[in-house]
Length: 467
Image 1 (cartoon, rainbow, N blue to C red):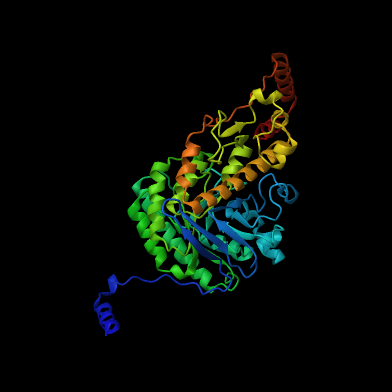
Image 2: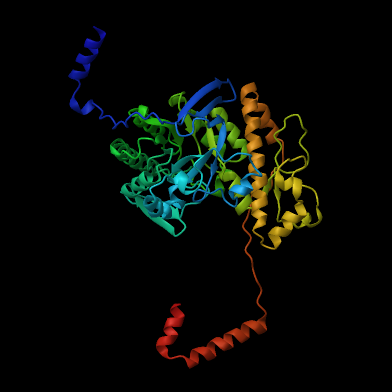
């Protein structure tokens, strides 16, 4: 009787009030699964991500990080170098279409998956539109495409181009094309536009996914956008709920514009937005939140309900800022006078033959000194960022082990207080290399150039100038 009454009530509604459901993707037996373990009162939740038929033994304990990559490879680290960080291959890889799009034709012609193409068949590959370590290039987004930032500069990618690349790569999981280019300074109009474009892209991607035979073994990750507008965030979640069965997890984006500046993001505005979104999302689905967040903000996001982050923070510190992570996450240890980071470009390290961090068990700290790493930077040796990356990845992996333990004990606030009591270095400012040219040499070059110009015909001069 109750069903009959509900049916009559729905039939009486005008046609305009009935929402058109999203196209649902077919159920996939290979879908990535998340198992929720413990939900604590003040410290977030514990779980495990895995369940792939292709890699049934792989499981990622959350809160956790997945490895940020460039073109499918962890920056500065070969597979041999990664053995100094972890005894096994990286389990979950973060790939972005911005630095893998140039591989599309080669992967398509080889007829193998992106995991096999990059020799990481034992790892789970997850594809997203953007690289969280790269700052956007200014430009006006077009209506039918999304700007991405490749090795050749800024370009617009259409939904057809994106989905064709996804079909060729066949990753284990991927996010539909979406517009997440918003931050704390975005206008309401820009936030609304981000939501409208995302809904349009996601609807078309779901339709493509449903019809594609090549993507039936791929899991979908739903993007939640809307900037810092709670009402738009609610609308974004409601939109994704229409096809909830199609998504294996959710990605909370639109909090920043990526790049190194994310490390200084104000958590007072971002954390309430993330906490509100997590309360509306299904508890049995995994939540992702990518960006170079500082360690303290990571704890706040974990407490808000986020499960998985990425290692772009490690890459930004090692490759762009030449800094080694040195913060303490042992709450029993008293905070020393040392800072949370070590600037390897500091001239005071030239005669410091101690490890980067006292007591660290990573390969860099066991085999090399601060003075040596500082020397590598001065001589522009490639080994410099490699050693810093090894240390930073090891330090960050150990940090997340500590986070999981504190979440299990429901003592995450203690770890947050411990981090807050440590000193931080001033924000990194890029140094411009200024090479002084002797006046005599400059005058000689100028004279030779003018004499060469006089000897050349007019048409040859213009060609040389254009070159």
